[in-house]
Image (tube, rainbow, N blue to C red; front, side, top):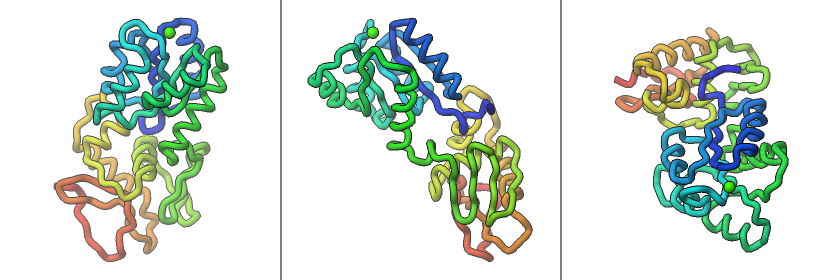
Length: 246
Ligand code: CA
């Protein structure tokens, strides 16, 4: 499995019961998720900002801030308000579920639960909120990317890309038409923790273009947006564009 963040789905577990954390970590990592965790309610909001998880599994009863308060706080802040949250609780009363969902949780699970049920709920939340993430095949203008076999075709012909170009293309195909700065692409594909020069993105975009160019009269698919960045777009034939945004 590739360590590139464009491929991994990040889950943050906020839970103070170590047995549950251990069980969830084991099962989520086995399924290929990247797992972060904390048992401290006061730490949760800053961890969400630091790691930008794709899903947050949040316990209700915690030392420090409660799950309900964390949920409300995440929803209040611009930077974190879209983060999908699955709330965990031993409280199964309907009024508790309603309170959890009212605080802004996307789903609610009553303890005890099986790890496979939680994983199914995580996938369901992702499908609902970020449909492209959970699809097995991405398509765009004659391009087809199979996430299971890692095969890419363009008008039925094979496209060969290295893992980095694959991640880059995948990220672009998940957000067709959207313009990304080089910083955003670096964060999404290489991750925040790694120091990579901005120019590296240009190099990989150039390789990606080369990989997508099957030597026939097909439109280019990566647009250079001046002083902004790059976007996946079907470019009209004959329209010239710059190699890099600057
Ligand atoms: Ca607890």
